[in-house]
Amino acid sequence: MKKILVTGGAGYIGSHTVVELTEAGYTPIILDNFSNSEERALEGIAAILGKEVPCYRTDCTDAVALREVFEQEPGIAGVIHFAAYKAVGESVAEPLKYYSNNLGSMLTLLQVMEEYKVNKLVFSSSCTVYGIPEKLPVTEQTPVQKANSPYGNTKKICEEILTDLADSGSNMRTIALRYFNPIGAHPSARIGELPLGVPNNLVPFITQTAAGIRQELTIFGDDYDTADGTCVRDYVHVVDLAKAHVVAIERLLSGKAANIEFFNVGTGTGNTVLEAVKAFERATGKKLNYKIGPRRPGDVPKIFADVTKATVELGFKTTSTLEEAMQSAWDWQLHLEETSTKA
Ligand code: WQD
Image 1 (cartoon, protein in one colour):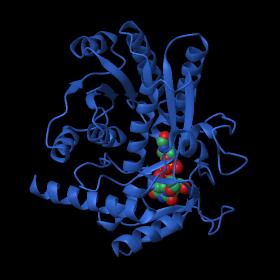
Image 2 (tube, helix red, strand yellow; image 1 turned 180 degrees about the vertical axis):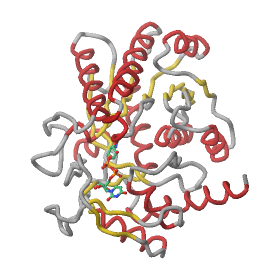
Image 3 (cartoon, helix red, strand yellow; image 1 turned 45 degrees about the vertical axis):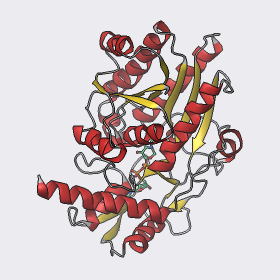
């Protein structure tokens, strides 16, 4: 079974992708420095799969340690690269931490991949590369703009590095997946988005408010030019997103991929924040305590994906509804409560 190295494989999207890779018949190898993930993610993965997945506690910026992994795991067929810092707000406060880690890990990984003649890469990119789009929905041809944060800029620069590498005649074959807003958790509720501190993102804040951990949700602005004045996003179930990575690695291994390809991974539907809140309430039957507050600086008013390219060229479409994603997020929150009270 083909070995796939998953950097950041103990993280939110990484752990879900490790499950889907295994269920698709691949042999994932996790590499994670646990700077933004916890051991219990490995336990959750094992509980779902009924077996442990090998994990190397390694930092991708450490070339010596990375070579060690490639030495111990001969025959890696491809790499899925998630390992990066991803908190937009933190990146504004600590830009150098983001540039050195996110660019450093990308460059070190590419160098070691070339040394070990591993030339298939799926890169975790982001819709943040589109900045504030002029036209909606965004296609892969929508102009990439200066990102709103150092985090988003590291994704844009990584795409440029990979494009220059592809244009240099290198035999590296890359697929960059531009995620929209990943939400929800595995239906088993054994893996999900780990709450590290006060959540920046909407859905963990919703579930923690519903659980009584947070007093109330503040909706950041209701004076945007949208159906109900709140921002529009494309909320994609994390399991659908994980499945897109399996399809991408299969395309690379089939030899059909060009030197570098970009795909939007979203549902193709935009929902406002208020619609997301109502979907949570409908799915769970929980009434959410929220108020309208001021806009959050840097927020993109509206963005959602045109998913034609992934549908036609990857044969990939999301299947989960917003309600199902919200229900899974709530089930995960309940699991966290249960296990933390037991601990
Ligand atoms: C969503 C909406 C907020 C919290 C994220 C990631 C980014 C990228 C895209 C991967 C916005 C509103 C939020 C709250 C709110 N993903 N909101 N109250 O900003 O779209 O970006 O997805 O690369 O990395 O950060 O996601 O969940 O923070 O916000 O009203 O307490 O919810 O204003 O409109 P965002 P988010």
